[in-house]
Image 1 (tube, rainbow, N blue to C red):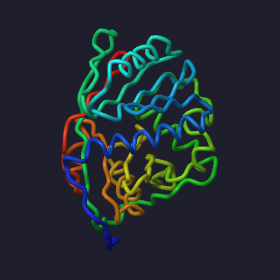
Image 2 (cartoon, rainbow, N blue to C red):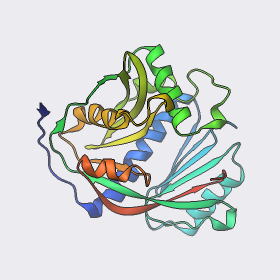
Image 3 (cartoon, rainbow, N blue to C red):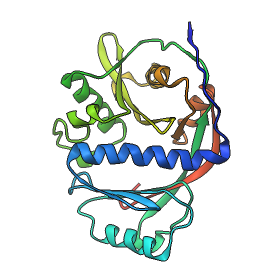
Image 4 (cartoon, rainbow, N blue to C red):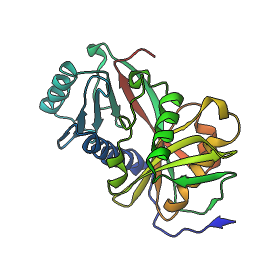
Length: 253
């Protein structure tokens, strides 16, 4: 069985800006839910968190002014914790800040039907399910700064009340096996934090999370930023690489 879709297509050339806008919407929602400072400017959005959450900067335009670049540099210098910068336009060179960089492709999926997942994938509503999703993401992405675990720190309950934000978990043999987040904003969907508990890896959990979370978005163009290992899966699900996005981090690789 498939779920039909019907919506205008987006172009590959538009994908980096669409991803930038959606990612800003997600991190603004996350910042509000955590009670952190959200800084919105013409060409970037930043969320300044505590020592464990750190600073997240999302470049929104390819024409950063010298003043805007200096503001970003000042935020980085004053960050309470780790710094992560997402730059789909490769507009700001942060090498002088001693940060490491790498590139990942922004990918685009046009509106279209999606197959049903091979296991149950449910939208999170209960606190216990939210905590399971939180733990899956922390383990899968190696977010050691969120250890020891504090419930609701990565995914506060308030995040579920943010417009357009949905958290999903996959259940295998009745147990939470993986999780992911989607955001719908300004007519575009996107995926974040798709991860699997180590005990359930190589059992199709990531694919199931993607399919289950795609189901409500099949009428929209959907973007994501893919890891190298994730690209083959996303291509099979109908995503096409559009352009490389440069990421910067103050933490070791």
